[in-house]
Image (cartoon, rainbow, N blue to C red):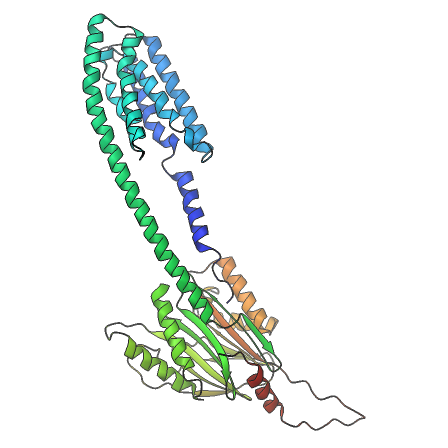
Length: 461
């Protein structure tokens, strides 16, 4: 199978980590409220006469220390994750700045004591219990700074009394924030573990689905085939298949409604049902068996329809049946093309119990291309996309070249729908050499030789 996802889990994890590192709650983003509030406190203290200012120099120092903390937050944010372990220096510096700000604005009379909450939450929101201790110690620094910086004996008693109350209140607050953070972290890890388990199961389903597809290419005298399936998700609802029959080759392409594991399960069931009819030469009968299998296995309330193209190639004739698919063309060796239109309804609708088998000439050099509707989106979404596919095939009639061209186009443009293509070409049989001016008579017609080559060398089921 060409175009299988390349480590989708690793690519997804890398993308999430990059996003969180660039746009998540960075140290700079967490520091911004502290910076804005300190700037506001300084401006209000200098412009509102009613506010107490015991030291204008202290205001400047507090603002300068806050700017240093902000500058370090910028450095840590830009150098993540290498410096992420040093991010806690930012709230630690903020505690010092807030202590000086409180001293400069009246100590016990300061209205800015409540700013302690900002660095406290920064510390306490981390899961480790030791960060609660850091938050409480930082709060104590803010309360004790005026005592250390120098205030009246009466104010010292007030500050020490305030310290006991603040430590109790802010310790409880830090514990609550920390516990909420721990519970959130536990739930997040549980969700991640469940997601990884589900993703592992989906990746396993994708591996099984890929294993059910035939080889990416097949070539032998008489026939050449190639196919690809590019699911838009890890598991898709498209599938293709080819296998040897008693008198030639069988080719199948199906498209199940929807995406994901559910569609993939239906696709596997349809493929198995079609293959079970390999000894029945009638393609319509194979589709009928698949339809009966769906109606038996699925709840009658579940409507999951599948479009399907199934063909048997015998000699110079292509026998085919189409269940609502209609995205198959035959590009002739002379450059002409013919679309094999849908003749009946899709499987799973419960409205049909017969699929007609049609017969189309298929000579040496002719090329059969069947695709899912994801290919239509590569050329604008209309049915005229099949004309573009035919034109692409005329440039190089090798099946592997057609499949490779469509695969590259899908990868360049991106695709929201599954893109699946299977191509089969009947190779020309070389003429017998002329010996002594006489060409030996063949033991069989070219059609017989082609059918025999296909039967002997087609891939085993």
